[in-house]
Image 1: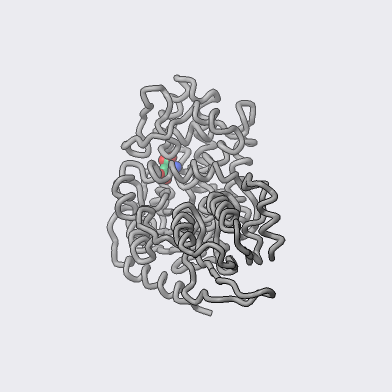
Image 2: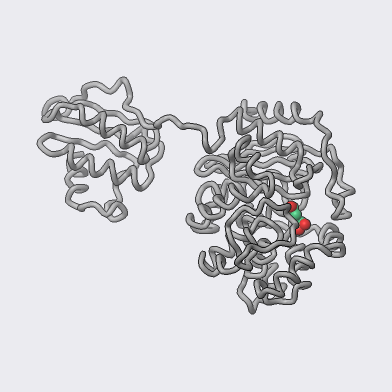
Length: 419
Ligand code: GLU
């Protein structure tokens, strides 16, 4: 069935198609031969459902969009401290290929080439061979995509042959000890990393895996731990769009990464993964039409991170009286998401209920609860239960992991027994 989302995406592409600004990234000779009219977009939902429009099966090289994922693999395998010893997290405000280091001698962040080359060199540890490092990276990026990816050898060779600038960066890194291997070998394998082939669908799945805390919703594989995703998304937000990061934050407001092949991917935490592709890029190396597509998606679908979200839990209006075996009780039916802001408000509303009234708190319609929401609600249940009959209706077991909440087990049992 064609859904409104399919039609909407097709419409977004139609509106962006006329824009022919920008130029092919011809510093990589093979990219200068690409058809500039190619255009595609994809959205992957939190449950793995994919919507896509345009040249959805066209495959192109991942280029700098590999950087957040290789950073994630390095964090997973080496830990935050060891990775932070080699690369910072501050926006550089420089172009992606600037030969620059921070005052402390580290590359400023893992999204510019200097930082990405440093992070690439860490994969597999100092003793890993070039082949081993490359294999781990291809395996890891494939796990994010949920299918086996491969390398575009023509783009790889073409870029490596002309990679004078990246070799200059790697030599600079070697001279200050940020990388320990032979610079030319590191640049060769980094270039191979950038030549991994993907489609917009792959990028959207990779993005949603970051957005959903590291579990690929299509394969159900946990690729990286949740803390890694938080770190990677933070760095994408501040550094992913290089020297256009401020413009991007204000106009789109989604953690993102671009690549000079013309791809852009974005990951909105807990919500959605997005991808766009069109080969002509602007002076920053971002796809011109890709940026337009993201501006539209952000505005039309209210995806800007800084957009005010309403407190998302409410007591259903229909909540009235409910019959229990031994009398009637007030029925409090909750709907929405339970997190700090929404539960705080809910607790104040529950406070208005007169003491002594029997209560049924019904979580059947609750869509999501995070650890602090659960903890606060359990605590409130214990207090509400003092001096009254309290029944909890919780068919999905959202409040039932007392060990995780750190609350008194008796409190939880008392609540569960009442059901
Ligand atoms: N492989 C490209 C380079 O290192 C990636 C740059 C980009 O996509 O922004 O120059």
